[in-house]
Length: 143
Image 1 (spheres, one colour):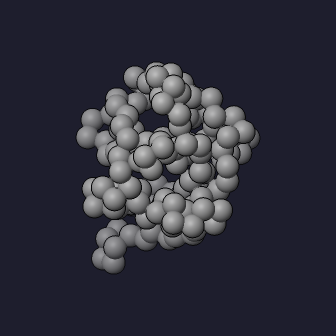
Image 2 (tube, one colour):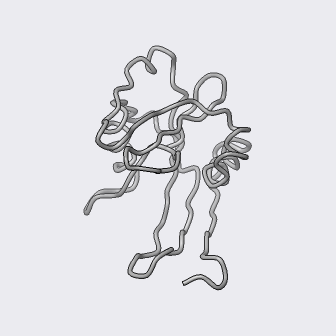
């Protein structure tokens, strides 16, 4: 889920597991659940934010090749959430068994620090109401 603030920063989280990278809030789709419903549920569970109908549209889809034997390729859906008002920020309560920290990150910093996140969201930030599609494959010579 892409959530921004009035300054144009993106909300990123780091999972509670050791050495996990910063990422956008979200998670896995449960059986019988739509990607949009999963995004709403995950943000509600992880951050205590009920965005309901304020999720505007699909910002990006990325096909990610499996990186380890026995794992599956996956699809990543990024939905454009709302611009969070400062009063709503006060309602953020982390689900500490899943999320260790959250913070606002300027989009320019994402490009250098977290290029994978930036690749998913920058096209939408530059041209809202469009959906981008990417494919991320394993580097040649890896198994």
